[in-house]
Length: 342
Figure 1: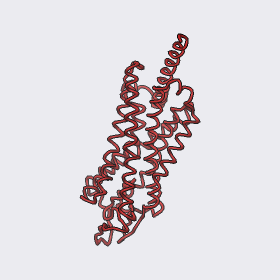
Figure 2: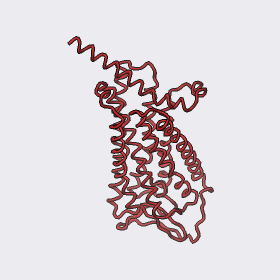
Figure 3: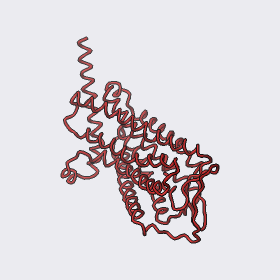
């Protein structure tokens, strides 16, 4: 993402326009990250996110990809875990850049790291939307869903989502550059015109936050209304998971997009620099929160502690499928009885 846009002296630049990088006459670059509380705090948070996201999503990939029977639900979980896992794999590049306050990986990785991180940002969000829509359809149209929900179709949907994510991430390959000045290299976005910056920022805000968030809210509102009406489950866990997912999505991504939009005004430069650093770290936290929310929310702590992690994850992943299956069976049964009366 644009984490390394705000690295000391250069933020963003238009080759045509009034804004130009602010450069100080520093002849020998010396990292000062460890001298600042904010930088050290963000560094610690980034390392924690990397470790939790890397191992957490890796565990989900192992369970859903190799230990469980392939179903529609495990296809969603596996795709989401892969997206978050790849995101975490590339976090060390930003961590090193944060510590050194210098981009040492060259122009290709400057473009590619940003591109991959945006691909995974969009793909992760799109998969969350797909999961929400799938759940909604399964509850509202149980008979149709029972006949139409197949692993093959789920795989096609995931592939399409990844292609759209790739298309939306191409601007990073076009506008991302690595420039050196006075012994320091900075990786940042160099837009041709201010209009390019505005279009990209607004498109990412709409496609990466507004539209997905609205769709998730609508889907979960319908689901919760249906569950309450039909008393589908005696457990409150589904409600807790739904509420937690929506809250995590909103909290993690809203600050990042807000500061991206504020950046368009080119005002309060130092505030934007700090805000985007914090916003990006909070957004990155979503990569390890997803498996935690899907697996552990609503579980009794003692039971979770006594049970093995692997069995807990497998049971949690299968729980939603079993709940939906019971609902589908119940609805099919009711439809069958109705048809005999008719």
